[in-house]
Image 1 (cartoon, rainbow, N blue to C red):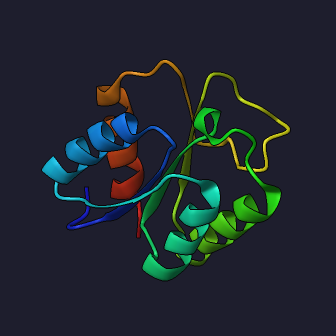
Image 2 (image 1 turned 120 degrees about the vertical axis):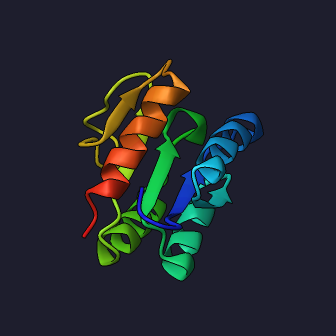
Length: 121
């Protein structure tokens, strides 16, 4: 993992955010959090994270406008978006090229995040 990467976690579940945040912080990441996609988009625009993790299952209908703002902020910073969900949805407004199926193992998710952060220019 690159030194002090910023990772944004967008998930309604406080417990999931806490666990993932703790695991990433132990590896030297600065972790940003948001409960909803709309807040995540604002954080991504202002804080410019190096990677974004979004749990689409916990978002109870991802708003297209918020998803577009989140994707635009990610694109400006060349930040991949890791989408967590039970199934890969082609109708989802978020990209599913980096999709992690639920239930997932945190160790495998952390490895994938580290791979993506390590491949950043």
